[in-house]
Length: 521
Image (cartoon, rainbow, N blue to C red; front, side):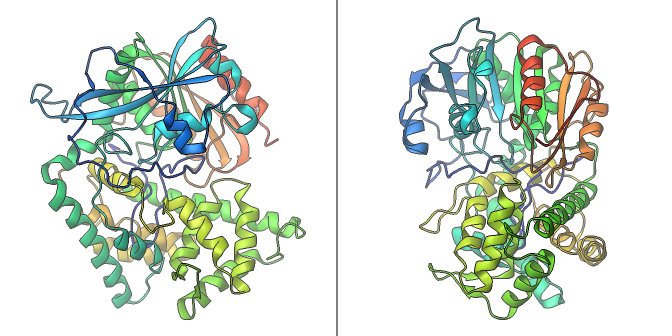
């Protein structure tokens, strides 16, 4: 950020941990062959014009098999300049939106725009999932009765002029590779794969690469605010979505009504600092998982030594990996991705324990289910563009990526400090080191002139560690911290305490009591 951002979900031959990855883990968006950026339908409204909505019940039907009861679904697109520095160039990207309205809506306040994180997560898909109501983990009726729920895919993501420059074969190789390539030969092999991926994206998109930056997307967000007809923005951003929202608040403080930033990214951190913070966060979350295993052995078949079981499984996989039903070998890399996936929610802990137990018995299905859910790998072996977009955004934002030599040194140092995650997070910085596109780092300062913002943090969050929460609030100068003493990535709308605090802010612009800490349950 500009200072920088965490090593967000990076397609490295080892792992990708998201500066936010999405929450919940979302299904593929079905765009098997994304269009080339800029090759839109031509039906999008121009930036500054009202959106032209049309019914699209096929979207929830395709995602989950049905629409939510009592909800209507409409879609629209807005054409935005590829480069907001030259808005009259005539070159545009199309930003796709979905608007979901409750048939019980009354006393409408406006639109609630949302971003699920990633970068690379689909806001269109997320809005659909959240429309199914509180009982299924969606938004409470207090919100859907007062707001249109508007999800959007940011530029380069999903349906919005998507970036696609990594082959399925390279993604498989990336995820399968050793998370901690210790020998120089193994490290060089991982580095060569990352360079090939970066070079391929540069060859395909060239001068467009800096246009996928967070600052460009934040300017798109203001065009979307205008398109839905709201004089000021009401926004819910998860994980990387907090960075997008914070950038917006700095660029357009006068256009802010209310921003909820849940799962904070700290824009003041350097790229290396952000990566190390994630290593620490995942190590802490994994320790919490192992403590749970020891305390609940009836639910954890790899108790009492869950850490030993996981590390043993990865060590065995380096020598003799279990083969999955689709012919893939459950290498240490795939196990590691499954581990990362399981730590995003506390409910994933039991799935991890069962998957490692099954793997010990020669069955890799559980590990591949966890890994494929996280990577959005489809049954036919293809991928959505989640990680193509993630790479393009992260590297456009990053102008202080370390050298290969520095990464090699940090790999060794962090292995000692964070035994399971440190080396992998160090190696995870390689893609942006090899990125040849120009950089467009985001701002990292106060949102002068903005009203108060709500910054939500979870004490056990692995991907956006809790310490980021106060740092982001302080940087913005208008942020107030709300704490959830729970596990997993992001908090709203998990418990009644969190829901009431966030809903009161979104609806009445009333901040919760300063220093409020909501219990885990």
